[in-house]
Length: 453
Image (cartoon, rainbow, N blue to C red; front, side):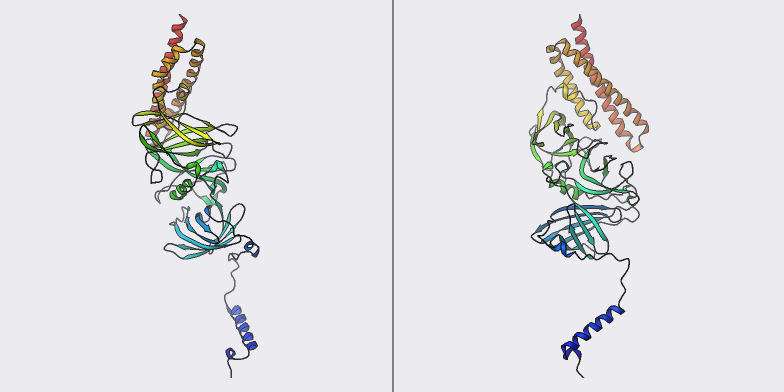
């Protein structure tokens, strides 16, 4: 008897389909809880290939944070993908691996080759708002592209993210799955520390919806740190390096090489999701290296009409005082100028608040120089009416500094033990400012008394 493989072709086909039906009948039953098929819709495969180049981010309460960065040439895509878990209950080490795949229409079908782990199949589907990633074994995941200048100039260098918040708009730092996931912007910034010349890298989080509270999150340095967000410093740093707003600007300050990088900041209770302050970060080493700024100053504030109004700030470098001011072109900073100062302008120094003890001390030094060098010339040349107006202004600043100093002294009593020294240092810096403005007010009042005789 002939075998089916060597007989009639019709008989071979009949036997084949019979065996296939038997295998299906006897094989494993479909799992009713299995994920939907990740096979792309034929309609999504039509048309020219979508562009998946750039960086993408997703924060999901169930899966943690995903970062995808890659380049597309024609239909070929290659890049890197990192997954970090922000669950305190089941912390996972980060999964890092290479992504390779091909694009057809709006679909990228790729393989994620995890270092020291299994390969995973991934299907990415482009949409106007972002991409939906289907990871074999995990499920669908919404990812958003890193915002570029063409997308939103106000958010250059920041990442679109989805993070958990409390109902009052404060970022939730304990258990993300139990809270509301909201759209946000997140970006790398630096904060001054109590030690001159030292700054700390943090993530700035800006919710897009109200109620809005601006938050800063420290990068997790050890598994024991009480924070649930395992943000990746290098990923945020790379996003800034790709932003024209954060382009480094090399300058000479007092004959020494230095670099400026501009960055964005928000008031804590900002009413709109657009930055209200433009900062300047001063570096004494090339920012492309593993460096942090040695100083941070305010360069401008946004006006109610949305334009930047330049601010004047001061830095101390090599025991010398320099004035810092930004120049703008087409609404964006084009240059940061520094000028050695011997007699600061009074408008620059008559300020109540600064962001840190370090910044308070720098402006205090400018305030003392203004009292000793600028004020005598002004009192000699100004009219009596002009001096009376100056006296009123300095009285208002003195009252404001005194209130600020009193408030900080009260904070000393309530501060946690780890923060007491920093708050005491801030109180001392404001005490020095209060003494300086009082001395300036006394000199002005003495000149008025002399002219009244």
